Image 1 (cartoon, rainbow, N blue to C red):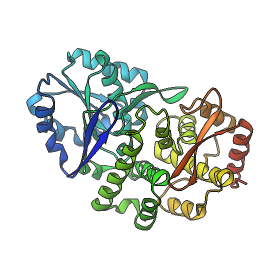
Image 2 (image 1 turned 45 degrees about the vertical axis):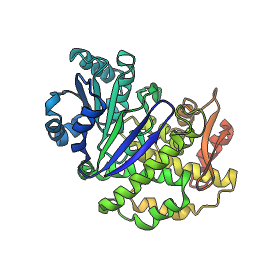
Image 3 (image 1 turned 90 degrees about the vertical axis):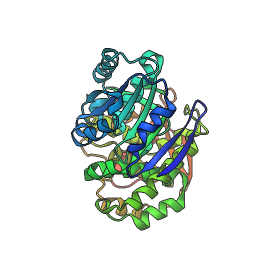
Length: 362
């Protein structure tokens, strides 16, 4: 088991990562939350069918209640949030209760926002079951979606701990693995050129990942996440760099309909666009053709879906959390590991997206 210490202004906590770390949860609950009254497990339909029984066995002394959300981004609606809060009330959770988030990034966002708002804030613990959640489970950003924007209704609420059991990853689909690995690549590009080279050199088939490879890149990604979160918990500055690829990515995800195009695959397209723009505006030295060939060999789509309208994408980007007023701000790279925030005008953005759609950014 690896222990990664996360430090933020409001709370310090640990990420416990390894095979079988779920068995450590009961001792943690007893020692860290000695006055614990009730547990509510929030999960989704897919994870519940695969793994809930094993978790409930470990938690049997507390007889936890369970709320099961729909799978994926469908978990992050106002209706599901309301129903989850209702479950907390019906089970009489109080300020000494804890919510356990058991699932991927969407379940973590939902659970964390319920915990942040229920009785003005109660404890929660992240138990991620996807690669994607190595990013979302750390750092305390929790939210639900609005039809006009992804993650626009939310809070900053740090967990008590993260238990990242690699055994849960064995049942992931290829699509979910691709979605999560895109965030791993993002961490490398914004922080560590050597890590990017390691990924490029060692990861050739996402359906043949070893546990050593999983452990290596998940640890590295979480440590990189902490580098930004520890210095900027509320995203007043450098934490925004973690949104590399997300401005266009979120717009694609929303326009395609939440759940129809995965988060990571949308972000991959956004990263390629940001890399192209970085070459044009900031003289980024980067072999983009090599990068595109690599990620395409891993199964990623690298072009904006042809059915999406440019004007609609730009409108979505103006609603992005990094935007100021109606100016779109992009995370770009001066070099790999050197991100910057740059405001891009509507006319330039329109020009670059149209060029991207034609296969040319110049």
